[in-house]
Image (tube, rainbow, N blue to C red; front, side, top):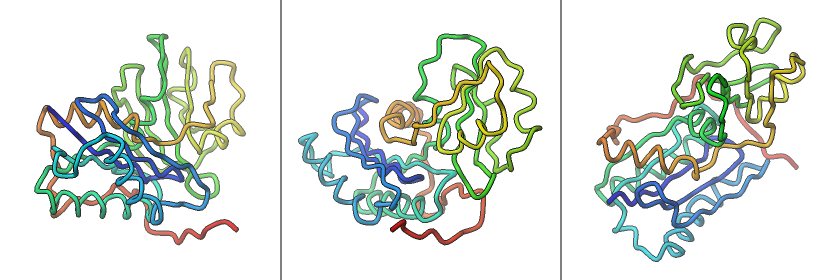
Length: 225
């Protein structure tokens, strides 16, 4: 059995779930432009533990979104995950933020390309490219969007851009084969089956040395008024 607490704090969405063998037992999340992670994360952890009718000591592992994404958000999530792993003496699992985003789409087209994009600064995004089986076919990177961006994939039959950076893509390209999912945010919900698979395969991180995948140096974020 794999009873896993999943933590997603890489974006504006503070998201927490408990899953057993990849099946969600309890989910709590709040998508706020004010980045509510510091105030809400531990509250949400307590709430999903209660809703799932378990104790912290029942957990088999902690999974955390490893990025890329918000520097501060990732630090908060990873710090919480590490603290729980140390206290409970259980494994730490990391999940790619962009892969869990890609998992939100249910694509039938065998030739579809899925490109999750997280907003960075100005015309920059964090992105990766996946096929419809969630196999990553281009590395994760930070890039400035222009007419040459994703040139290798734009001509594909069906290209899905999803996430907070998709609006920037939409402003540059108007191809008929491009589909934009602007409201997609990273969520612990899609982490559940990925972390369950990693747990079964004992794909764990070193709790002492694990660091989030920032991609870029720290930039101070301020809350919106």
